[in-house]
Length: 202
Image (cartoon, rainbow, N blue to C red):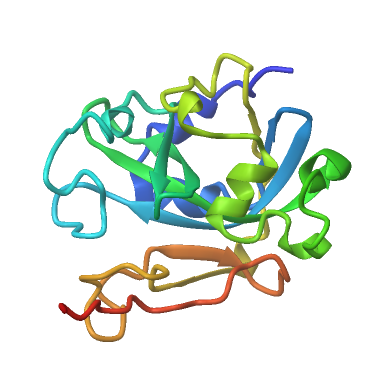
């Protein structure tokens, strides 16, 4: 299987256009397919929640493009999270794959995670990355070369909802400054919203 024609053009659009367009898309890797039900958009300029807010680093280099690459980062010393790079080359925008439904390869996705319910196998960005077998070695992977397949059946636009991103600081008091989280209404795999928690200095 290969990525569908025209996908490169879709991913090359503005991140706030690409993010909701990815809802319902199917991502296949390592024998597992996940249907995306929740994503978050991240830009660079003016977006304090973005890893690229302060410029290019060794960690975030893949985020600067070109569009159609995978940006995978390690967080909290234990989890990997996967993003689809969007926009113009050098623009540093990406869509975090936050949650989805495992629709194929369930036995593979469950391996070593028998404690999880079916809906939780890819519910949250870390679990989604585990389900698809993605880690730091996949950072910079070209989504258009067939190693990871991204198919894009359209979701019903009437089901798309938007709101503040999960656990991101600098969003404003109620998160309304960046309503850049998108999800499909009524999907049990969508992760619960949690605002950022300020850490107190000791």
